[in-house]
Amino acid sequence: MDHFIHRDGVLHAEDVSLREIAAAVGTPAYVYSTATLLRHYALFDEALAWGPHLVCYAMKANSNQAVIRTLADAGAGMDVVSGGEYARAKAAGVPGDRIVFSGVGKTVEEMRAAIDGGVRQVNIESEPEMERLGAVARGLGATVPVTVRVNPDVDAGTHEKISTGRKENKFGVPIGRARQVYAEAAATPGLKVVGVDVHIGSQLTDLAPFELAYRKVADLAAALRDDGHAIDRLDLGGGLGIPYERSNEVPPLPSDYGELIRRTVGHLGCEVEIEPGRLIAGNAGILLSEVLYLKSGEGRDFLILDAAMNDLIRPAMYGAWHDIVPVGEAEPGAARRVVDVVGPVCESGDTFTKERALPPLSPGDLVAFRSAGAYGAVMSSEYNTRPLVPEVLVKGVRFAVIRPRPGYEEIIARDIIPEWL
Ligand code: LLP
Image (cartoon, helix red, strand yellow):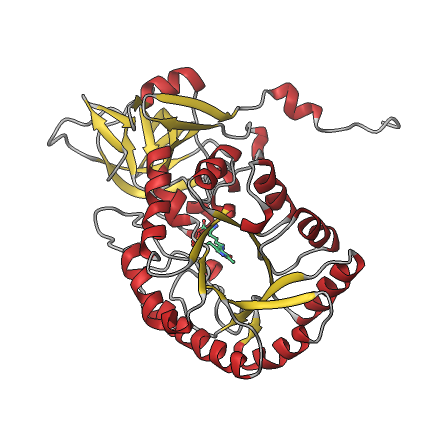
């Protein structure tokens, strides 16, 4: 069910009019729906209900404390990839034994913090990292549960910048070397092997690459058991895609994905962990923006918004599509106008889309970028000294600012002019 729909001609987030939010918070601003977050989490939870499992939300998609708390209260674990994300998860009240620590380059400080604060498992990505983690654990007199992230050399068929499971990618250890690495892990005091980890990429709109990868992982897990390792847990990563262009994309459902997991690894009797980020948060959020100008260029028209690439970088970075919807519902049959939608930042890359046919829009009108709840606010910056975009969480008829827009003084005060200047 879509929780961003037009009611009485105005786009709402759940029961709150986006006009009301724009008036209270200003634009641009991200707006999230609690109901959508919870529903998406529940879809995964139900898809894996056939066996022991934990849905570890990939916090990198949207790590606002309020979002994490919402999901953690529903029972989610967290997948973190930095000391900062680990600290955020803890600050939001997530217990250590529900936090999985992933990432290719963990520092000693990050390892220490996770071991000290408690961690469900650390997913090791290389032999040198394994050695270092063992040393850190021993230094703390601890034993840390680990998996090794294996690289199954499977083409996820997704954008090259977000594909991770091929042998030329920097992630994981080649699956062909895994048995050797597990033997080393088992022989490293301070580490306790608990399972296998894999993640092949993001925004997968086809289940076939998952199937290939998970079959390889199942074979590996059986071989590792034969080698004497206790493989009780499989972390199968995230990556299930979402429809960005609603009119023509139908990605697989979480229930099909859950069934695929049962089919490929269910016979092993392992506890299954997954790390979805985008599917939980993506369609739970929109970026709200106001039209500043409609400018006629030579041969094309530009719709200039108050949101820019610093607020939502996905189009500039990945050529990503986001549906753009007027907050005020267009008259049925209103003539569309073909425009380039751009922001005010001083570079041509600050283009959200080219030659998009949109209903008539005028300065002062509000628009919503759909599917912006994942990898939107978290990837925003203050480029051009544009204040970090605020975030709002809606629940039913209520809404709350969950990250305020900083003032210029606050931004400027972060710089320090040395006393010799
Ligand atoms: N687990 C690991 C180890 C990951 O690296 C990722 C995403 C996930 C889970 C979550 O994947 P998801 O379910 O969200 O697809 N900034 C890019 C996406 C980068 C994804 C990086 N890793 C974008 O805006 O499309």
